[in-house]
Image (cartoon, rainbow, N blue to C red; front, side):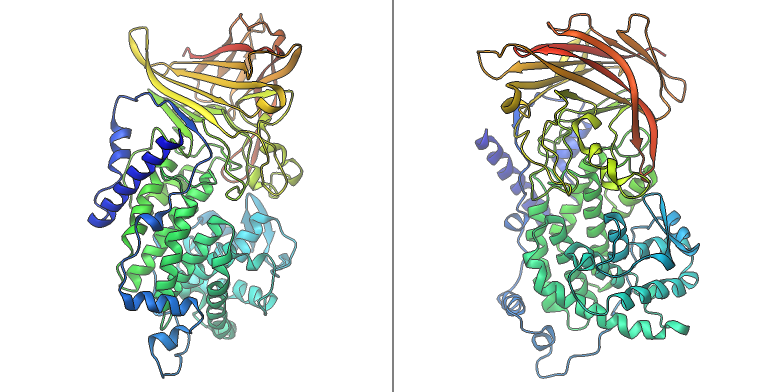
Length: 626
């Protein structure tokens, strides 16, 4: 199978080269053709953890020998002004152009700032009570907003610039007072430092007005801008985090475009940025962390960076435009009928307006990617019914952000209503989601899939990391005949329980042509011819969407699901349970985390029982009845 994957990577490289040579007009032709096609061919495959695209090997920046020499000299430590204007004094630091950022901030969060507090994942933090120091005790989400200066974009979106300048300078002054020297701490995480430098450069009119009581902020901030850029010059090449490296290199490119004598820094940053993007993004455009929020971060970064090129009247690298076009279709594949994202890899259901605004800002017009072979989120859609299916291994350790053991989980929506969901929200813990339950939200039981012996399919470790578990997922997608019409069928199996229990979990999903019927089957297959004796506990969980009312049938083998808009779905468990004993269907409490980080009490359907160690199968069906 490795040979097949290598061949696919070579074909992808050739297509990327062609797009880079002909410009952004050739937008993801293979993906668009696949998305608009009515036929979905069979895809027998074995999915290992996704591999990097190695973009710098595919589309190298075209440069002369002189530019290569400048890049080398800058990397070796020769100051940029000495390379750009030899024998002259370095000019004072100033921002050379005003950037028109197309990416809007969160207006609600900006309004909260003007009311006197940060709004992070639904929780309020009074500005006067926040510890701005790099070593301050705040949760990771607050660190990102505080030290990455994401709040600047939110503030800019909330009111005219004149009404925001004084507050922007006040908060910036508080941060500068608490971080007078460059030292270790959350503020000097490469990703936070990169976002911070980008925010300062893009929103310079907000923080460099130098009016009233904040006149001293301008000079101090300009000094901090140059020092932060110099710090990133030295540190970013050694950044182990793939997304952190991309943000750090992107900030250097922006500084090279918008600060005096920046050409050497820009050339240096562009080469590093292409390498980092190649290491961060998979062959089909999905980030290797498999995290929707990270996918959005990259689209936002590239959109802002291209705006910096336009402000500096420079032509952006074609590879950056191609990469942005490559990133959008996989993100669209995770949109439900309500326009918001599914709950995957620790994220909540990112709001529809936030997703739509980002896509509009990117300028990319395309359709969702149906078969994301390497990112792994399969998409089935018929009528108003949409299914998202995690049919790939979890991310590798170096790419993991808030890793979750979600292999073979699915979500189901009917129009704007979500029928089956995953809990989500582990990455948002510390706000309205209590930190103590964040670890549990990463467990297999927090997803709509099968669990053996209450164990995770992949080990869930501290600090968002994952351990041993699923390494390979076998998957096949094809069209099948069903009552005279073509239905979509996906078969996938993972090895996460093979070493511990000697069983492979296979899940088969078949969505009817009209979208009114989703048939599922969970199969436990022994990994050797000699099946083990005895039984093992199992649970198949279906977390229900917000405000879905559930009522069990009289025989406790089915349930009626009433959606908020009045639509009715029926769930039914097949009578043949493959030799399993004590199988029951019950309704238990659950929760679902929305895009603002708010947890909502919901319910879940749980099939529990004892399965034979020699294997078993469990068939079930969701059918739309009204």
